[in-house]
Image (tube, rainbow, N blue to C red; front, side, top):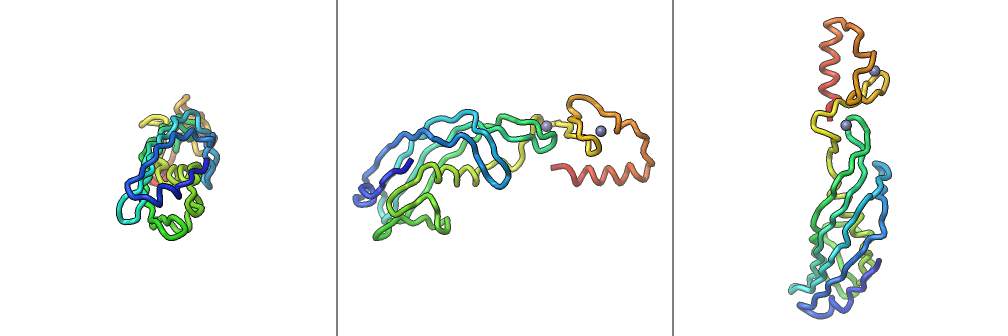
Length: 174
Ligand SMILES: [Zn+2]
Ligand SMILES: [Zn+2]
């Protein structure tokens, strides 16, 4: 969805409120393809402030399926953040000083889908766990250890090997 901001950009203190229902139904990035399972409409406030600035604010509220960092089971993960963008008004376009060549701005037009996409990327959770004490998967057979112990675990380890494996596990921890 594109919103034309040229009228707002022309008059100080002018504001518009636009409800946006995102078309985005999955989030694709270099990390993978994550289905968006629910999303609230965004109430976008676009306001011309003094000092040739347009302020864009709104709240994004959605739920995305993200695999657990340890066991890789899908976890419904709430993604919630505020958009708070300051754009500089130039003669024939808007400029985002925090981003080099933002693809969500075309002159005075705002591509809301692309703006939200860029903001999700910035607000993406660093780590997702299905539960705090997730056991992860066995590095040998790939079994999800939350569902029980696998037979690989039963092999007695040489104490020196066990120490090495402890260190390995420490590094593996995400
Ligand atoms: Zn897990
Ligand atoms: Zn195993």
